[in-house]
Amino acid sequence: MTKIAVIYFSATGTTHQLAQAVAEGVQSQPGASVQLERIEGEQIHHGRFVELQLLERLQQVDAMIFGSPTYMGSVASQFKAFTDTTGELWSEQAWANKVAAGFTVGTNLSGDQKHTLDYFQTFASQHGMLWCGVDIPGTYDPALRNRLGAQGGVVVQTADGVVPERDLALAFYLGQRVAGVSQRLAAE
Ligand SMILES: Cc1cc2nc3c(=O)[nH]c(=O)nc-3n(C[C@H](O)[C@H](O)[C@H](O)COP(=O)(O)O)c2cc1C
Image (spheres, helix red, strand yellow):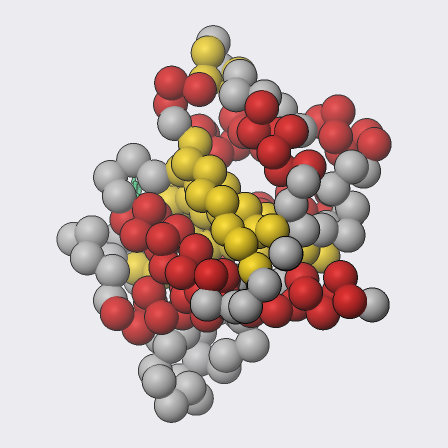
């Protein structure tokens, strides 16, 4: 069984909707299982993420898919608090060769969501992980997914918290793709 974790923060539920769609995509792939790991503000004490059992659980997975709303042009501080607890794992390269991917949402059409994806990718690279983007060219998809055209991962825009169906379909696809890529790597 290929194990995929979706690690995300969501304050008002939009990123949560995307996380659920990603998880459904993982589960659509035979032989893949998913665990949803939602970061909560209560897990942060005096600025430090203290839910260290999460790090133990993540050691067991084949792939991680990161999610955060875009806040001030980057990940939310709650997500950053989680990444800052992984420094010891970084020094051991304990996550090397696990697959990684990401998704984000913002209110604006060009609200610097791409920078959030870039942060995820940099974080994954620091850990020696293998980045998996989206192989759907914007505006060329018959199902009209990837309407914003980012290929580093899933970028979504909504001004009212309602996520368009085709963005949910894109998030589903990302989960499915990460599961498939992880299985191909494991079979090598
Ligand atoms: C502090 C703060 C900063 C934000 N910064 C951005 C931003 O830089 N770009 C953007 O497009 N949206 C920005 N937003 C909007 C959120 O990304 C948007 O409301 C998102 O859907 C929230 O996700 P959630 O429902 O999962 O919490 C910001 C919202 C907050 C509260």
